[in-house]
Image (cartoon, rainbow, N blue to C red; front, side, top):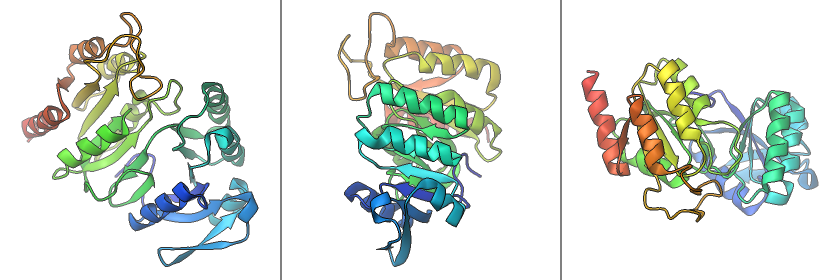
Length: 294
């Protein structure tokens, strides 16, 4: 089984006809994703030959949903147009919008996140790699060939660490891997994914990857204490990050005593989460926890 994205998901790509959209649409198709159309008002009515398939281009998300029954959109549009793209998707009533675009102004992200929530659209991202349910569907830019279907659920702020843990644990495999993004304002959170993985009967263990900045991991720890019965293994990036310097993601910044890797590690370990010092050690902890359950 999987969370949020399944073999039955029908996926639109907003910005499919751009360079990045085209490249990653091809990769999603190669991974088995059911891409049912692209969205570009200036190229509406055309079809694009991708991987031997004629993929139609629609003038809007609502039109694409009406024609195909799409229930997921992946957003590759430039930062200046991302807010309007997500609002359009939410107005159309699409259940899931995966926003890959980075560099979106915080004010725009605040606006479209609040709007999408009111409309009932789940947003993953922005500035994220998307999500993949291996062997079923891939919505975003996560490499599909580094793992296989399995029993681990992964939620991560970091794209590259998502890929590394997927590769390290490729022999076990994953139910779903969700890259939630590292911007200060994101849609789907660690807690959302923890709830979904807890409810998924085929997810046996959860891996949580966090990083410096904010208090999302501390809030996740409090949620784990009260609501998660499955084993959780964690990794926090940024133990050597200097105070006051943004590290990679816009939200990855330590300010005073707030948001440090040490504080996050302490909070997670206090609720029984084993936290690795490196990604490789984290993978070993996962294997140990799975062996304990045999």
